[in-house]
Length: 254
Length: 314
Image 1 (tube, each protein chain N blue to C red):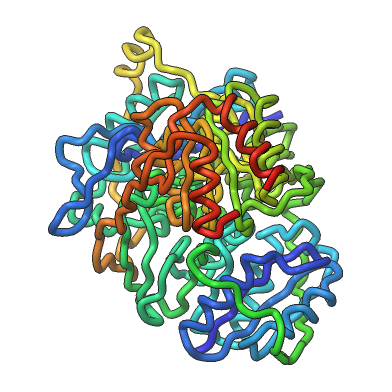
Image 2 (spheres, rainbow over the protein chains, first blue to last red; image 1 turned 180 degrees about the vertical axis):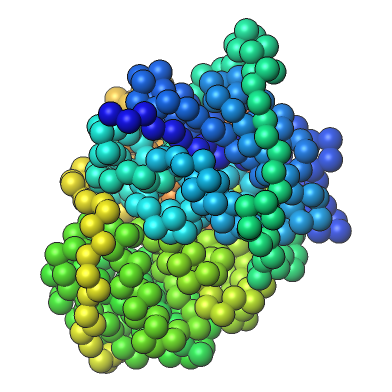
């Protein structure tokens, strides 16, 4: 079997544990806030590393689109086991309007340029919560898509994907090349070990611009406003089950 | 101006979130049509033709729509769009809609908008970001606006009183890149999570999957659906289709009872629009109490069975 290569997208986002605050002037506070790799991207990368460990993949190329700091995210990916990195540098003003559609165009162009058979992505980023990039990358490439994956089996050119759907699970079979997006239960990502972090420093990160790939970054979506959601007021504490039942009865809820 | 709603269904019946998407479509103004694609879906088309406010139901039947694969549905939607020139295309923000709509949008060369909670005008939508910690108003200048609709943010359209025309559309030739194999749905006699009037969810505090029986017993008294926090799913207590939260299901029932759930941001994102929230947790500092209407600081293993008993006597 010909050895396959995979492209894995890794997005730099505000760390999942940070309580995000809306900035009075618009947007959310990002300065001095801890950032890390989007958790779903970590799962996608882990899956790629496992496929390579089983010798089903030959090379893992990771890509991140955004400002200079994305290289830290790429380094983390290299320490987790990716072979080389691509940083599509997008300067701050343009980065503000960068959406999943523009990223999908970049990923599709890179998938062709790098000759990969598999694009592995997270199912959604925990900042914009869009859940679109994988589907759109697949569309632009005219490849099949296995979204919300909870298990992958690769046999020759056949990829079986178990997917998380609303009522449970479903299985589909895709012909490679394909795009897969990772859901929570696909795997548990490893931590980068110190020796691997040291080794990752020697791995190569190539820096490109969107224009090198012929991708136009203009967007026809504009954010008009970002605001705080209405806050819920804490209610009352009840002492006993009977009190609770009483309150619920009063409210006509039971 | 006209809108196409992509109907989600099982060939047997319409999936409820489609009715919420229809309401959103009607709010835009202009004519609303629905597209039903399936293997044997005449029943669904008939059901839809009675829903209020729909002008036309388009039906495409072909074996290739088995499993509702996006690779096969997309060319059909593109052909339909070419024929009727809709200004808007939408569906419910379910696993089906989330999987399909971005693929359609990219093929139309437009950026889609996910999971909208409000329509300000035909080109301006509100959606949540950062697990519901911020609301984002987006203006869309695309030639076709493609969006998915959060079911809990729009009422269901009335299922009677309508009289839409039903028209057949021809299915484009199969793409054949993907194949649906099987479905393993979780069997349950309880109401479906996203449309239940009462939802009881368990978290890490339940300690094991077996202990969820306490919640099922309580749910049986309240005709409730049972959900779980991501922590409970991660710990392997229950399957992922029970997850309520940012990356699971969004619910907004009349009554939400959170049991042994601390209230992580990403869980709150999935349930804080519930009308009344009850929290049961032994830790008085748990953040869930900050959003609960009624908080009970107690050991769930003691009070949940007590509550079940109290409701039996009622």
